[in-house]
Picture 1: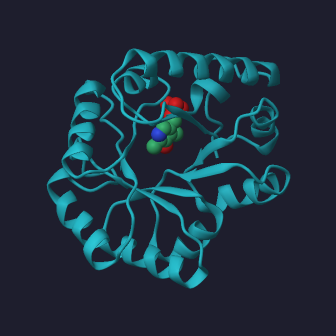
Picture 2: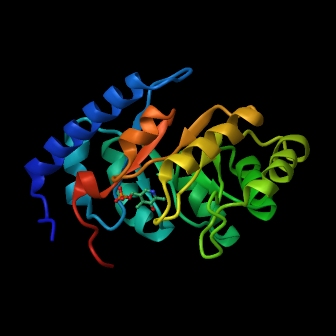
Length: 229
Ligand SMILES: *Cc1c(COP(=O)(O)O)cnc(C)c1O
């Protein structure tokens, strides 16, 4: 059992992850920006998140709208310069809340959702940065669009909706070599002229950064084991 980190541990672990990410990114081949770390704070209470904020970190990820609203409406008052990513399944009836709360949504995976996001952004006047989630392992229980359907979704976003897509995100199957999935995501992004890649978690963020990720998503290695909810 990993022991629950105390507050000082969060700061130290975060610093360690940031260094390892930039070293890995520097080893790899990349165009444009370096690699950023999204601190995945889902299940962790605001008090722990504040430790990471106090250490200067500003990029965070959550996977549930309700939980994110409960924590981040307050946190954002104190730290207006945060960049909050939604990295979890999004129902169309929650799109209004998601657009209001998040700066980036990484889980666009169907036309209906893209249409709802476009409509809400037009209505609210707020632009949210968008990534398409690709189900590179073709796992039925997982979110994301199969890679074969990516061209049609992109066409819909670009030609019909005039909706900018910044990049691609994937979550490799647990029992497969992540490098194969990272390589596939990179190939797809190159083929369709997409700029950014979101890939890599606590177990493989250095590999992902080295393979060209612009965002890695690290939860457990910063905050410790997730708290059951
Ligand atoms: C929770 C989560 C992560 C972080 O996972 P860790 O293994 O705890 O680093 C990354 N990506 C997604 C999509 C997640 O839901």
